[in-house]
Length: 282
Ligand code: AMP
Ligand code: MN
Ligand code: MN
Ligand code: MN
Image (tube, rainbow, N blue to C red; front, top):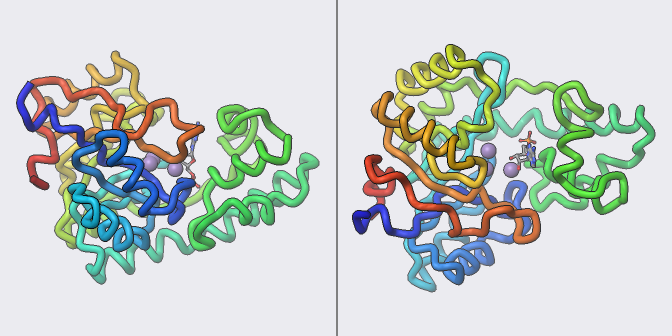
């Protein structure tokens, strides 16, 4: 393994500015404690935590990459695009993210109304109590409240019984267009990374269409090592990275110490033959 590949890079994580449970500085400190050597904060549709995270990282000498994870709608599915190495002052990115966030409160109201119809009252207030950023109310906040209030035994159970297509509390939502999201990231000087590809439910042709559109829009990398992938998926997306000429990224998608199935900084190394996207940040 090259030194570049051996570097403990964790380039996907969430703070209280989106649906994580640690404030940006606490997250940075935990990353350093866990042996992360290059760390990116990638909150959903938000860059409000980057300044505090960057300062905390500077204070303890951890190399930091400013990031974001943008919610996109492509061919009727939600797809996430991570932007790494972005300039948080870029007006085009700031305005684009504000538009992506705009519909979240109304969506949350509709989610709560659906849950009330199946006898679960008070979900909006409940979810809001779990949110660190009222502009970024997410399904995760509803999930944590559903567990805390005894309606479900675990967050995993929530995402089987509620909040997903066909179940109470699911409200379809139109997020950013793929080309717009990649365009904002590039305008901000960043590199666009297709997040956790193993989570999407496209057939092979649909998945190829996504990759072609992503690359045409200016996307340059794909997450190969993520806590969402098993070994077979990791091999599959390593092949995809090579076939489509994409660099490879690695990130835990960390949200919370208790919920995580892979600890911060605990993601396996990338397969040898891939180019780590983090060569850009060293
Ligand atoms: P939202 O952007 O509001 O639709 O919320 C999406 C978030 O919900 C994701 O970023 C995850 O944190 C969480 N999530 C979605 N699906 C699941 C799942 N099956 N299990 C656990 N968390 C999930
Ligand atoms: Mn999340
Ligand atoms: Mn995601
Ligand atoms: Mn994520």
